[in-house]
Image (tube, rainbow, N blue to C red):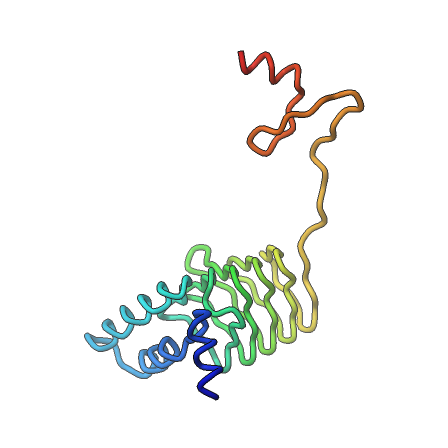
Length: 177
């Protein structure tokens, strides 16, 4: 890797070389003081980059984080297969100590949430913002639910926005006084 590329990666906060070195070393050590120190250093390094990868997470090989650890949370009980791509603000969470098992060659889009003891097959694409709580077979693409409108402005209604909600102007005057 060229010096220019390293400087750019470092300035973006994408330089995770130190984190991955700690991760691999921590996986090789037996339980004990050295293991605990490496776990602490790994957690601090991940926190510095704005994310969390649990110390007991199983990452088989070649995990790619195109935006670094920015907003990524991976449970300590999770298992991630080979050649996976995980974008920013992804949560791979646990429920009752059961976390997802993600197959090989998967892509997880920005803001996706995968939670519980689900199994994600190989070659699966999880779209941005999707919430996955059921098993997904091999080769599928999962996207977020369709949007739904929960309220409409009436034809002659004037609207005042307050706290992100459209309020009828006449009701607004009453509540303001």
